[in-house]
Length: 315
Image (cartoon, rainbow, N blue to C red; front, side):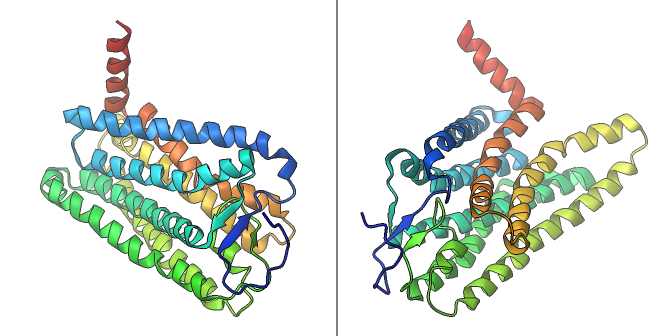
């Protein structure tokens, strides 16, 4: 394997993932928490899917959206972590050019899908609290399926230009990506061409997808809070707001790391590269880790079903 910093080819057949620049000697130690988080994320999300499948009382819109979120988390974490761990453990740093573009596509597609599902879950909470009598007629199984299909189509189409634009650039400087996976901006920075269209498209997607999703979530919760504060007793207000707690925690766990990374990447000129790369590895992994824990701890139906399952096995 050649690790030279320059290459004479305009269309490299492979890229080399450097890992975490400056911390190569610590890759094995860094892999331990990442591997642990990945295993917990896989087990947690598979458990959520299993519990919802076997518990008929959980066959409703909120839990169908939760299953969509779990599947999205599984794909998102699996698109990044296995290749990262093979780099850390076996020094397997080469990645085929097409495989790199495929990884990039899946990361962008499922990050957007996660944002869209969180927005759909906010819609579910809005209807359940503000118009409870019509909840079952508005969010039917057919409507939930249509929302899921719309999210897949939206994200699949919007994510497509990312790899298509990257494919057209010439790469005459280097084929070494200073990252653990094929992050869009890290690959674009290697091109020896005017890549402003890629940067502009990335910003457009942030504002038009994540920005609009967050706007709809905010509007939904403004209406939800208005409905909650109109309830007659404090206990009723707390109980109703408690039904939104898990969803709010999931929103924070998804948007805060991504917002923090974007802020540091664009305005933190003095932030070391290895810090940026470490943070970039957090936001595709932390939400898949936290979401099943949040819903498992805070949702009584899931918690009770888990307890019954383990109690039955223990007897």
